[in-house]
Length: 368
Image (cartoon, rainbow, N blue to C red; front, top):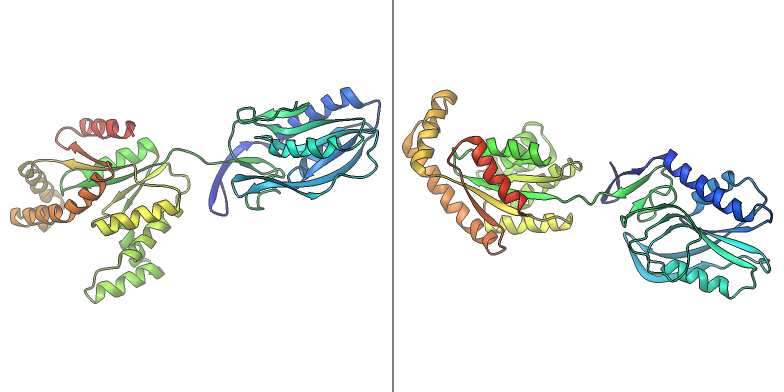
């Protein structure tokens, strides 16, 4: 996995696979033109590496020139193809092989055909290293191509994302995996931590516990930890923006994750909205909010048993346990209503064996 600007890309084609495709194109062209001297016209900027290697693989007389066209900005085509460098001179009566890096919708190809149809060349043909048959809408034949590929955005070997990545020897495709982002709720003793461990392993998710994140930042004296501690030392609540910045750092540390489990945040509707805004800036969102529900009396029994082992005083006092339940109800009600309005709130029975509860959670997630 590599990062270019704000996007992550995973390896799609190795250097050897690319060179095999280049040789394939060279051999096909040679079969038609080895007895004459064609002019290869590369389309800049993307085709420069392909043209270079194609010339090394083409073992017959030829000439090389370039035109420059552009239709891409970022990840998408503008739909408007600009001619930035005109066709070469002295091509009258010659055979021309137009060299493209990639053919997808065919807009650039249409422009090329228009350019060369106005010249007096003997004939011109189209050669491309990559071809996307699923999205090609052109009316012109593609005479030679190296590899037919799916309609995924790719970089490397001359292809760029916002002008970076052209120098990569291999080709990478945009990481378009389906992300699963969950908010997990549960009263003390509901088994939220246990289930989070199972879910993160099953779906390759990163479990982000707000409490753990705060402790890490404060213990290690990070700038955000120092800032949070300055509020806590004064008895003030840490502003939501500080917490969101901590969560942002955790998300950005884990580009390999297929999603995130947010635990302990959001606790208010305002925080839920802030989390939505943050995830939207990353082209993500919350898929589901899942609450593990259980009868208070059963949870009290669980916590009292846990308290015998953990020694935690708040797990050994029934009155303190009930106060924690009341606090949970008060805090989660507005958050529950926030996600219910988005049809993202799911209640799961938290009573039963660990395996049974995991199966219930899995059923909710698989239906997303």
